[in-house]
Image (tube, rainbow, N blue to C red):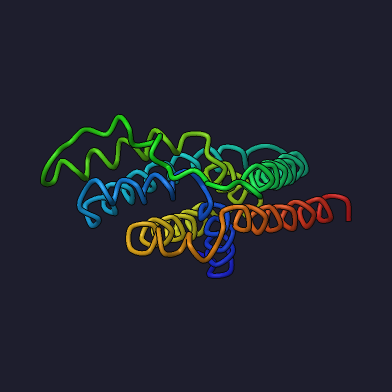
Length: 200
């Protein structure tokens, strides 16, 4: 376990996930269900999705080192482009997405079943998500699945906690397009650093 890799994974996933659809979905779920139950369900979904991403990244490490680094760099750069495009899409719009479209199918349930409902919504929403791809890239780049898992999952738990507790207030002060641009910058830096290591 490497504390540097944990910190890097946390920082990268945090800035990428904060403006993501799953943040918004968690926010909306917390207005429909009990916030703590939402956080438990979302946290469990993130744990499973992160485990899957880390496992895929672990398999990728069996490839030649240069191939791994090039693929990781391309994933980082693709993430930067996608986040930049999303930022442009949100920039200047009068109203930004509120995430309600992700929870429309969530059933009106009571008690602990709210945990399961939250799990199902986020588990479905997270497939192929940028944070999942970034986790795969980080494992491929650093060959440390445990550290990447811990850092990534901690970031996802933190983001979902912020969505549950402070989501609407946070979005009043920080616009989604700004968060997208910050995430794009982080991915761009990771991509460039990885490419430099390949060709150095």
